[in-house]
Figure (cartoon, rainbow, N blue to C red):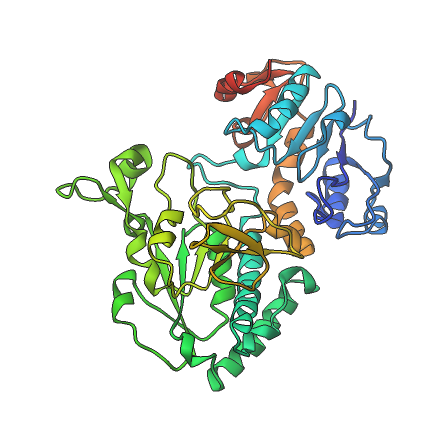
Length: 431
């Protein structure tokens, strides 16, 4: 089998129109490495079939001749072809129950699975990701959502001019729209009754940095968490940015102990929540922090029940861990219906921006709202690894197949067997 790769159509949901490799990179792979690309026809894809044909790809639904098949989202079980290399966001490394049948099928069909999420350098930094675009889209949507929430509280406001991210042609158009609103906010301001407008950002990785890049287009002042209690600005003509790191979110359970970041990562059970102390000062929480069940939550139902009268207007839960760091994130949402309101007095949820309680925005595939920009950036990051993946010698054992170290870390299944780093997943597989 020669160096032939395939690009799947994305069929997980109607919003997924991204591609792992854009047309101009397909052309480069052909000219530089002799790699042929077969692309499944897909009318909704952000790049048209004609764009791929013009750049040397072949359009066909049959990917049988492809050694490696690239996708963004998970491949439906019934579409898995035996003995192929599959590369996509697998969502299996935590033993996620909903994808264990998929993992078992890949094993049973003697496939090789490479997960983008696990392609990392020797410092464990992720190399192929959409994260920054989740931040971009999540922040654009948050500004749109805040405008809608303030409007539904009976106050006209300039943020109503901002649209959801998916309604803009590209990131550049969205940024221009926000810059225009920003200039008017400097002069006219937002409703004074809700001032000061304070955005709290959790996390400081790619996602948070992307969100902050959009936020920074607004008139703002950055302050430290410790300065929140003294803040008194009723002008409505600028925003305040607060970045929360782990030492603000938790405290050692024993007062005599000091906060140690690596100790917290290793022994989160030794720490207790502290974020509650800052919530009363925040208008918006932009949540972009990694979380799993070992760590304390940032915002709980119990806290909201005890403190129902909040300044807090909206949460943009970009991380979107269901019942996770933001406990009221009880479901993920779609771009055309992105928000719901949680009413702590009645412990109920209601879609939309209208009603009593806190708005929570929980779109789970945010980069798909900026599909062209995010695909181009992702494809650029993936390019250095494509030839290595398709050139792997599958006749050899895993350690001798020739994968780059960065790719080797991301091989979850090799020819139908879990690799040593992921052998723990055996206990999660269906019988």
